[in-house]
Length: 316
Image (cartoon, rainbow, N blue to C red; front, side):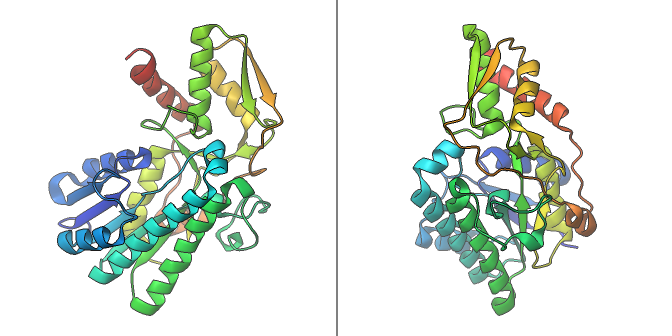
């Protein structure tokens, strides 16, 4: 068990979607019993090695949670393969090495379901991670994140760094990125249906066939998993974090359409890719090692997310 009270804890990517949920979780659980430092991209450029090393040397954290990432949807991935690989690889390398240099008590790095091979047998198990190459549009991001697992395991063996690694499935929830064209699927769908409803459009066009399946985890549940893992887990093996069930993009779109109250039709443009055919994680290890099971069902999580979007962007 890792003691958190009285410790200086750093969260990279704290200004991002998951970072906001995790910061809220730590404040709720620990209040002022820890010194919590959130780093966003405006606070420290994690790609700049000398600045990262200087910052970590100055603040000397006890525990580090590395969420910082360059990430987007399929369109963003297709346009930025080199940028995605470089940014995610270099940020992770710099943070892990900085943690080694100051000998942190514990480091947690978040990985991604995108790191799994394209045709992994469902449900994805941690031991299948190296069985093949990721789906092409996700490969630069997924391979960079997969490499950080290897780095953590090597640093544990050579330097004794207590680094743990969580493979997190597609997330959604409040504070997600809803603007622009590079959103993940759930915020993209929510925005599309609200826009179509407002403009009284007869159809909404979505990419792909609608047949691909995905597993979605509410970000509040992901924060709970991270909090439990940082306290209770200290093994080198990666651990899947998910909800343990999958849904097709068509079924998901129909759910969101109904919750938004859009009455038009859904049309799929099959000239665009589906991405990975199926995604669904085996989550037994998370339950076994730190008693985590997702508690927010998809309908409840979608309602929370849509209500937040309405308050922020529709009625706000």
